Amino acid sequence: MRDPMRFVERFSYKHPNFGVRNLMLYISVANVAFWILGAINPVLLSYMAFDPYLVLHGQIWRVVTFMFYPPSTGLLAFIVIYFYYWIGNTLEQYWGTPQFNIYFFTGVALTVVYGLLMNLITGYRFVLDAQYIYLSMFFSYAALFPNMEVLLFFLLPIKIKWLAIIDAVYFVLGVLTTPFPINLLPVVAVGNFFLFFGGELIRRRPRRASTSTVNFRRESRKIRREQRDRLYNHKCAVCGRTDMDYPQLEFRYCSRCAGYHCFCQDHINNHIHFTE
Image 1 (cartoon, rainbow, N blue to C red):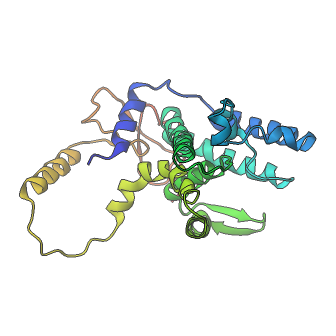
Image 2 (cartoon, one colour):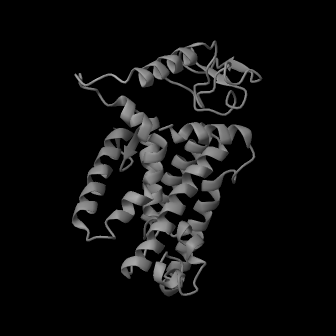
């Protein structure tokens, strides 16, 4: 099975203007506006969450407005909103606008489709916001920048990968302790993370020695593919495109990055600088 990221990267390259630029800025502003609305009248805020039962009975706007539901309550919400804005903005700079939009709205679509299907099939009624979609963004950031440090409680420096592991533990516990079918909603909502990073996680998994029969046709294709991938002079450190696959692209090296890192013309001025 082909890595779906290949298709996403090719689509993003062919449609560079696809998607909403600075998507997380608009979502963060809407988060703040909805927070203020909830502070004025909590009843009005309840009309914004995703309730499949009510959506199927005419309240279609919930399919959109639940994306803007504040990720937290109280004054802590402003810290959380800024944190997710920072993560989303970094991912957009790293991936580019089309790829980030595809990632975010894939999580939204998976949540909506699964919620509607479960309500139709089981009649189970539940209310959701976008917290798991934001969580999938956090997991993606941790997968790309595991050694990035943040200040926990504004005091303690901690690498992002340890926060992601803690969140993953609570995530799994929530799945195991929540009744079906609501327990699968978080899994579906972060499905975009597995779609984008599943292949990479499988490739990183250590393989045991096997005594089973070798599929020579599959192995020969793999060898040819690896040989083809090695026949390039330049490869973009952001999108992975090479001068062999895209001979019309220009490739340059960034003097501000630590080390020797090559970037295509689309990312030479739009990437996070390597520091180690």
